[in-house]
Image 1 (cartoon, rainbow, N blue to C red):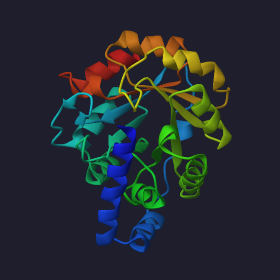
Image 2: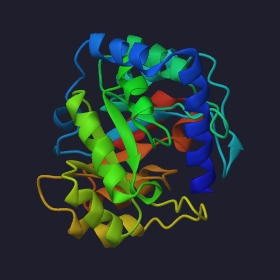
Image 3: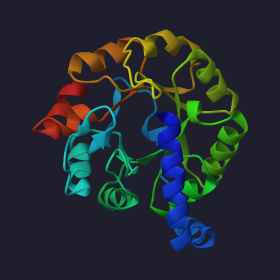
Length: 256
């Protein structure tokens, strides 16, 4: 599944590149206002921080929410206390787009994450051109040399990489490239099975000074508390916010 998602994302980027060459996207990226410091926004605090996600669908759940106005949803997240907004920009299986990211970036004042299957520099320049402050890198999807080069490019453009892991070996690889923001995804992106205890089993391998992010398997405030007790500085929440009637209230409950 992960290989298919990455291949599809790269193929879609290649189509966009025909319409808008790298030089043009790079120029847009360099003309953007400076990225917001996501490491500062997500720094450990007295209470857990939440990255709230704009997410229409997923391969495991199918369609979840129409989200006709992603900017309005993002504003409700910001008002509800989110520390950052994640925007799915993958179109084939998640129903997202770069246009969603542009709309969200123009509507909120907190950092915005481009969550996609990133495998080449063009996608990183696209992210910055669209106003992203963070870019997701999935260790399992990338050879170490490519992971390092994409991470370096993200940093050079002033953004922050959220480096996602699923195992002890992947945590080590994330730390080897110098990641300051390391996520542990409870969802195995090869099988799409969930293991909420995976974060707790890996958290001690992430040293102090590196922000620890728990991803997936969040349905209730108890799930957020579970991750917090296991050492999470940040919890990324998507499905639970878009499938319940009042995302702002749900978010506030999670933060409480």
